[in-house]
Amino acid sequence: MLRASIDIGSNSVLLLIGDVTEDGIEEISDTSIITGLGRNLDSSGKFTKQAMVDTIEAFKEFKSILNKYDISSSEVL
Image 1 (tube, rainbow, N blue to C red):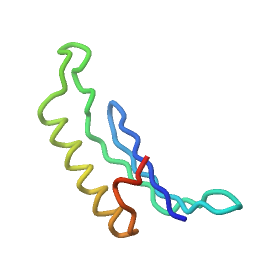
Image 2: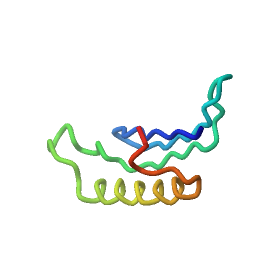
Image 3: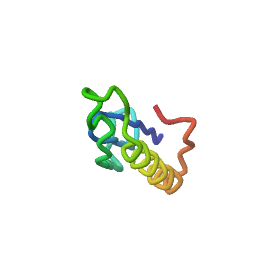
């Protein structure tokens, strides 16, 4: 059974897809995109517009990858 998770970090977002079996998890896809979401967050207290745009674009790419594996975005952790 394929499962996916997204990790949103201060510098990058990650998509991991694995095949879960009785024997464990086999990595199927591991995608990392640098978005700089936390860039200047400490000094300004706000996300930059470009970082938000970059993160949204990463999510769009992740959606394409999820579609390739027939995984619904509503099932992603």
